Image 1: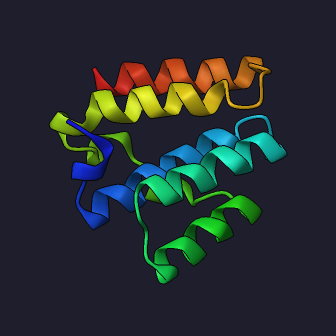
Image 2 (image 1 turned 60 degrees about the vertical axis):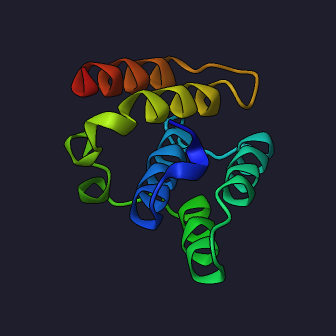
Length: 109
């Protein structure tokens, strides 16, 4: 499955997860913001969706909006791969990012 094949709802779901990983170390670095904006472009999000993602760069998504069990099984590997890219986007992998990713991976398996 390719990232462009995601439906609108799944694209936003992916971005909520990506932004939550950006917040794992309690700050969003410029390189992480760049990664998120690159993803927004790749996903061809509309203006309203882009504004929603920009809000997630200022305030993390609510925990109830990032339930891994909501991710369709056919999209889980794509979400994991993208989350891993987000974790390493700033060139520094914080212990909290590793823990969050490991938990995410466990919940998706």
